Amino acid sequence: MKTFARFAIRRIFIAMIFVIAVSLVAILLVRLAPGDTTADLVLAGASKEMIAAERHRLGLDQSALSQAAGWLGGLARFDLGQSSRFGQPVAGLVAERMANTASLAGLALLLSVIVGLPLGVITGTRPRSLTAALVTVVSLILVCCPPIIGTLALLFVAASTGWMSVAPGAYAVPTLALALPLAAMLERLQSQAIAEAYESPTIAAAAARGVPEARLIWLHAGRRSLRPVLGVAGIAIATLFSGSIAVESITGWPGLGRLMFDALAARDLYLVAGCVLAGATLLALGNLIADMLRAAADPSVGHA
Image 1 (tube, rainbow, N blue to C red):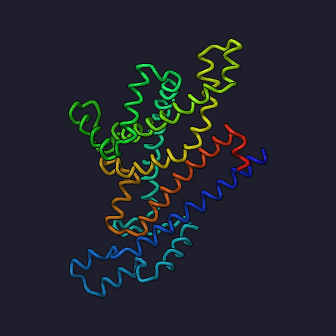
Image 2: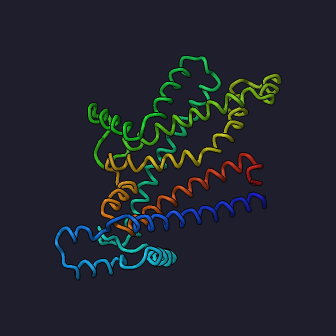
Image 3: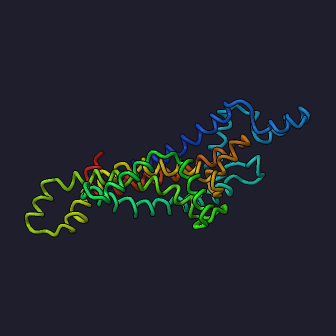
């Protein structure tokens, strides 16, 4: 138990460092890129005094390191600065969109697990069946399909058939666009893992003792196969959040991905940093949960 506690504390500390480091790097990259949020004033023919005053208000007359240090100090007070595009505190904007993205990602993750893992068990234990052949082909197509293409295809089907709403904020299309590729990935991983677990000596010994086949597959082999699947859960979660930017932008979902796109287009420094902070927090939290589940399933992980 003490080993698991040390493992959890170490992972939490690493997650916090990751979130802060990624956010600071985002600030520095936006500052180092040419141009800034006052470009519209320049194009509008504003005076040099007005432009200078706006740059001072936004802190753009400071060095990149000074501004990053100031943002870090504000973070300690839960102050993420002011959005230059929306004229509102970044914390409020990001919190609302973060909740939207978390709900969408959580629903997509749940759907992908419910669909992907059982199908992986079927294809891994019945590899020569017609069901396994069909599922394998579909999974490979979904894994190889870019998120943009998959989302556009779902929008086309929804608009053509009326089976799903294409209105901004509707759950069906963005959820499926995120869940289907992830379910295909989980199915491929689970299929390989349970095929290896099903051939292990312990499963053969249990079968010799007369344990029913369904119990062997879904309990004994299924439990053993979860360890390698959980080992790549962090990558799966990262894929989920990286794909959400394109999906949210195309479907009009009011989440972090769409807000990040708007912030980058407007060169809104503090809003970009806030979106990166929120996204990194969700990613770190997902990886942390995956690490805890992996450590619980395989005690040797806690010694790593």
